[in-house]
Length: 242
Length: 326
Ligand SMILES: Nc1ncnc2c1ncn2[C@@H]1O[C@H](COP(=O)(O)OP(=O)(O)OP(=O)(O)O)[C@@H](O)[C@H]1O
Ligand SMILES: [Mg+2]
Image 1 (cartoon, chains in turn yellow, brown):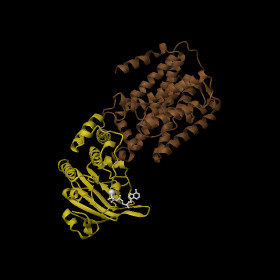
Image 2 (cartoon, helix red, strand yellow):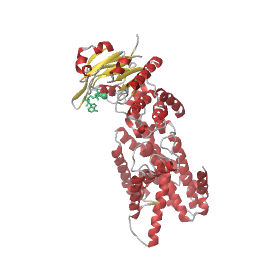
Image 3 (cartoon, helix red, strand yellow):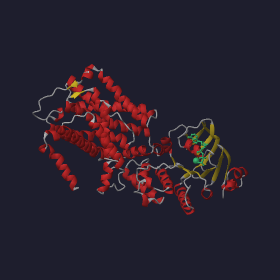
Image 4 (cartoon, chains in turn brown, green):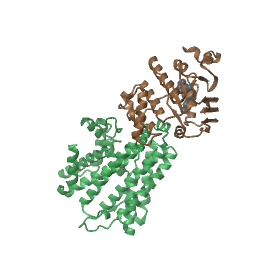
């Protein structure tokens, strides 16, 4: 039915002898929302960094829309159609919220005026309009997370990588974010791969979940399957409220 | 608005009223404002700290002077050769540094090293006088010839005024294009910039090439205004520092900062020199101590520079339009 947009095949990555990712493989179908979960230090962010071109995998390959992307630079991966957020947020602190998003929107629009209009719609979507003139450094952490999302969305990606963007949000705010992503997915066909500890969001959004533990993929399946998976319960979900 | 009009008028008619001394100070201000603007492109906009901008001024000066002295090529032509030479030098440094991920302090050290190498090279380059200096034939200044950069101080004043205004307009325009936005993104966070699809290498190269090319003109002006060039002066580290003090004190990354900083520094430095002369004191190094004190005062009282603080007082805060461009 759906085509495979992203395929990660047996990728490994070590840092000074420490295996952060060991032979993980999974796929993301076009138009799906897929979650990557697992305990702290499981290697989720490392996995994102390899997809996004920050690290080159030691082994394995990554394909996006049919082409190899492992070994590409981060900017080339973005141009190819993957947008990402940073777990440790990286706002352009000295620029206004609006200008932050304009930088993203300039990816597909050469002219600043066009990019500004595009940025305005995205700021509206994420409820940041009121803060668009503030310097990004003045934002609260939840707003910085929203800015991360806004900036990545502005590059008009086919695949959006979200690294713990719900962390620190209140439940009502989480629900708002969930609604935003669901809309983007339904209306624009945006494919999303998200790392998240907030199970409320994971359960509400994802069609498919992959679980990482000590750099290895220990389970993959639908949300229903994952919450009943013995290995997952033991190493991760057992200690959290579902 | 009114203030701007008055200021413009004052700048335009200044040579008619000012004596030679005032005019020479005004020229110096414009000269440093121009070079500060050029340096600001790299550091203020793109976040790449160059401490060796005297390299481009020196190369620009020597190239245009050598073409003039040895081949009779007029500066209006020679300036293009100077610009190209400086852009090539900037590109070489850029490729070396940015390809291999040299940034921050190490990049700054590299720029110093290149300026030093070049100084040593020119010290031994007999073709342009070596360490003994290189002198331009000074023609009588009875009529102004802008294309030959020969004429009265007033002519030099207007040349530098036009250059400074042009640099300002050019930088203001750049800052509001995609290039300007991308530079600022790189300055604020290179990793985030790259994640948004910005080829950081390409845009850093663009910054160094534009900045060095702009600086070249400063060198050409210097050569034909002062008519003598000494490697140990023009390539010296202290010249690089003089260039960057203006924008630092005025406000790094702002458009008015380099101009304001150059004006404040030059006027105060001249004032000190005058005072010293008036009292008959002769203490070497006073200017340097004074620069140090100015820098200290700015860092303590207005860490982001005079212009941002002044703009806030005047209510000129950029309303979320251009970032930090005041
Ligand atoms: N750049 C790096 N250099 C060295 N070690 C790293 C680097 N990045 C990650 N690691 C290590 O790799 C392992 C996996 O880290 P990673 O950030 O991918 O985990 P994570 O699953 O995202 O965890 P969290 O839920 O806390 O964000 C950790 O042991 C971490 O210390
Ligand atoms: Mg992580």
